[in-house]
Length: 275
Image 1: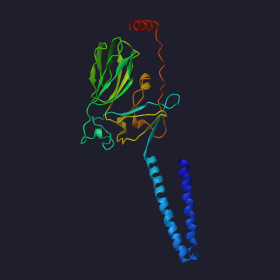
Image 2: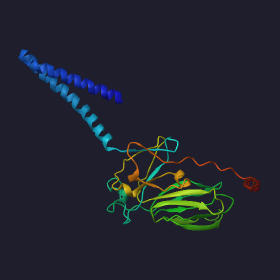
Image 3: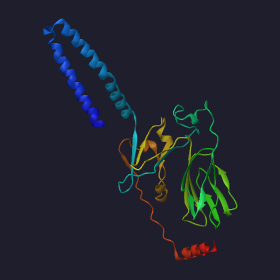
Image 4: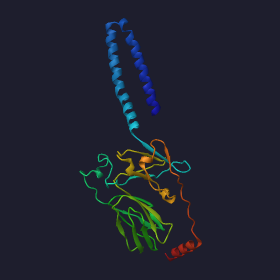
């Protein structure tokens, strides 16, 4: 498609050059031929205006858009980087209301949504949950064993003591930020709840790209984060520190898969026999 546009552009330039050459020889052309010539010029010009305008509009759009590229420690595309909004010093949201109606005080108020972070096979499901500030999250236990769910995160700290599958604790999340969730009994259980200040969040695709389609007014109040960063001890990175249209490297790798101990294996087999 890009090559076709370039070819069209080149042909258009050649046609205009030919018309210019003909204009220099008008004195040797009789009246009827002059009328025909000017009609041809008008026809050609009108046929070029719209395609050339489309090319110009597309170029302007490409210049206006910004793309973030993320790579990991091995310089491979990093999918799953999440860009979300946190509160500023005044606790205000910073998305342009025109691009995010949910943050517009004069528009409809977003009703809180209840989300679910389940516990299945001693893992949080989903491992990463994205919610908006003011939403709630329930923590059902679908395992046949009890769990002790907690978080020490400043955005939302809590402690839900041992409970089984007959209870479904539910908590609200009134502050934006990253909440790391764990189990006090099973250390391998780690989940993440991203509480965004607004309704808009963006994620990098399989090529590690995020196209900034949202009108972001204050980059310092947006952060980028990936689940592997917590395991490596890295905090979310402010958007203002991330380059545009060139790769940004996060020095992270996929965590090593933890092998099950002999004691854990025997315990799991005993539970399975009981089921």
